[in-house]
Image 1 (spheres, rainbow, N blue to C red):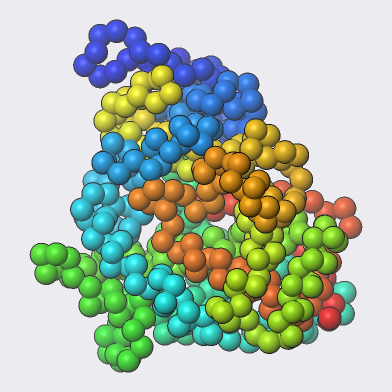
Image 2 (spheres, helix red, strand yellow):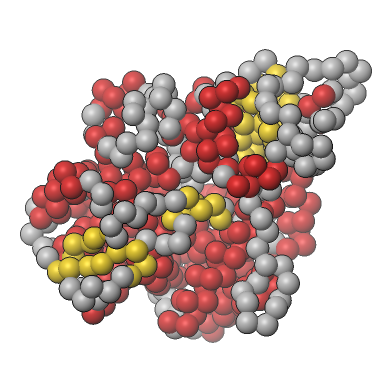
Amino acid sequence: MPTLLGAVRGVGRPTPLPPGPKGLPFVGSLFELRRNPFEYMRRSAQEYGDVFRVPLPLIDMVAVTHPDLVSAFMDESTGRYSMAGPASFAWPIIGAAVPMLEGPKFRERRKMLLPMFSRRHLARIGDVIADEFVNRVDTWGEWADSGRVVDLQHEIAKVTLPAFLRAMFSSSITEEEIHNTDIDIRMMMALVGGASMLMPFPNLLPWWGRQSVPRSAPRLYMLVRRLIRRRRENPVDTRDLLSILLEARYEDGSALSERDLAMELMALIGGGYETVVASLSWTLALLLAEPDHLSTLYAEISALGGAVPTPDDLPRLTWAKACFDEGQRLQGHPLNPRFAMADNELGGYVLPKFTMVGAPMYAIHRDPRWWPDPDVYDPRRFTDEAVVRARPRLAFMPFGSGPHHCIGTGLAYMNAQFLLAIIFQRYRLHLQPGWQPQHKFSFSVTVDGGLPVTLSRV
């Protein structure tokens, strides 16, 4: 199958090809990859090594599984690799958020956001987030001791989204808007996932009675525009993220365009709550099957004496953080991609311009070289400092690395530790007999079919 990796543009001789499956004519390994991108990447790494090629219909994808080689493109800051790649031509038309930018504009925009994710500001908004969590988790009491099976993944989304909006935008939205926004964010995430060819595209046709991208995209956009309009009409004294973005200026004195402002808010809403929903759902799905690890967590939470956790309590919730990290490790991700923006060399192979190269985190996070008994859920991997130091730095990278390292990492950990404490201060959760979590890739990695549990009171 002819590929872009067969020769470097402008060079008349073949270049080294990474090993990898041949795939089918025209479609390559697309169908096999879509069936189960997680195990496909893991099997390919075991068979072909630290750098392997995955043939796809338009271009080949190169996967890299050794942490040192991953650093070469994830941590690169000179522009040789890009998160947005060739799609960046569309940003002036539709607007761009931080993940879509590179170069000076990226650095200036990220600098605009940094104050809202600093430790000092997270300490300010911690009480707001915890208060919203408590109010909404307390409503779960109607299901406690009833035997009713509840999809906790869906319910966690209904907790984290309003808390994020309240903390970041000093805004509240209706229950219907929360429901719709959860659908819309997932639909847009699926669209991005489909564009990477790792999963089928979501519904692109606006059929009556069915969720679709043509329905979700304008509805989400209109929600964001309402938030902006409300703030312009009713300014607040609180210095929240929306205020900062409205006041922010580039070095030349220009403000964010309306398109960029709307896109930034949509990206922040999605990244600020949906990824935590997915990671925490995986944490609970795995943790609830481990009584010993649960007992350790109960004891740590009990030391709070029933008080609502605050940012000052986070250093005391080390086991909760370890449980979350181990959940993220086993959650994994099929690929954290970058695009080569020039002809590059990696691991002895030449990557022509616009080659998609990425880190399959599911394979890296379960590599037995760094993770003994890799499929076993064991939070102690993150509490033993000697074990942690012995691993390569990028053997665990749930929030990425380099210039595009997730700006909301501290917020994500605070949300997870708070929620684990608040939930288990009130309830015990019980999995359905014989149930096992399965991966579903929709840009983030959720639990396929949700997280079915029953609740009982403490």
